[in-house]
Length: 489
Image (cartoon, rainbow, N blue to C red; front, side, top):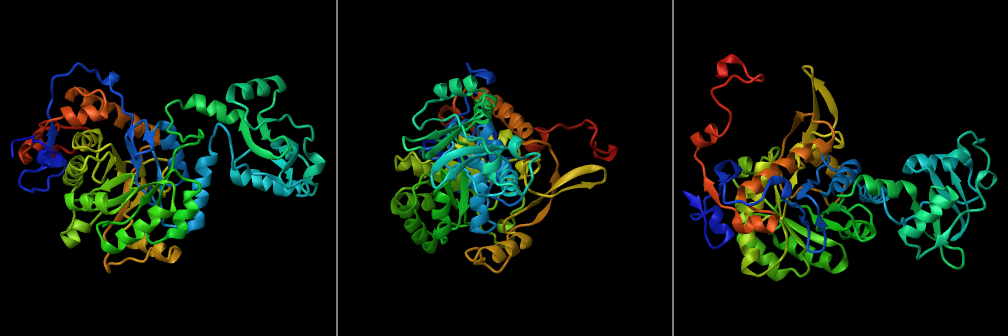
């Protein structure tokens, strides 16, 4: 194939419809005036939401629940909650993420003065908070904190232990004004009220401190952590429930280029306000049809069958490797003059793969395997042979399909065969370790290409095909590594 270069992204990846993969390509070094430390990784996750690093977690039940979504958003990326649960459970996960931190909490958890200390304690423990505004109707009448209930008789009423003289501020108070009041009165929570004394919001010192600890966090317009959630295109009720909380909805089907899926998605787009990412798709035609037949899509999820736990291409011989899919969709987006961002999903083994995907027109990459290895992933942690591993399974695996069928009436598989496997991946530790490695590696790759920002990479990157022997030569060879046996040298 030689050097892959042409007028369109599709020409870069394939001039003869050869469905190339990450293993087939390398990024050629170019003239550069950019050091890796100067590379800026912010990008568009959707048309209306940006993230500060181009890494998004896959909506899988061994990858993304509240803990992963919180951790990734704080680091500048995006978590997409899985839907392998009831709608109520996914909504509660979303609320947990949004409550994790905020400049102004609008969805305030409150309690009545007639409730017991026992109930107040349970409520604080359930939501991992240290205090509750006390209201009668919508009117603020006090505040109760963990210190108030810690040694109190559980049978006492909240009105018996709460602080009645509460320091408050007008609902239009800005952050600087809130800081002054918090410091002046030595309090940690500042309820915001209107002129009638009705509770309108809450500012806490904890959220201010967290904002200082995570300056690179991806946030919404209210200062809350940015969040995505997966939905079935046929489950409008769930989509509307989540639409009230999350910023991004991700249509979660293995093959989006389908008449029934298109028709249902069209209705969904008319009913929700959140940005909607559609996918998965893998061809120019699928992107073309989406761009011309669906109004209001805000992102593409591309790649079919490349995930490490996906068996679609093996069992059905149908699919579109992530590299090929990215180039196809990017070419369609370019042809139609669209700015819809592309998320490359599947097969990302490290920062080099991310660099190749971005070079071909992606704005971000979606990752499952690498994030499944982290403490924040919900998969089970076990010890095997003195080493730790975490559970990782495809959403098309038999066990994941069985759970979905039991909890989601819209999750019944349309095909009578599994398209995923389940197993174990090496435990890595906290997700920030993985993000640091991905970030540093991607900055180095972009430095080689001479690109300071992701859009520059689209223009400057040149890729070349590499043979199987060349691919083997690109790895360490002719040396005994600590992890290998002497027979392999």
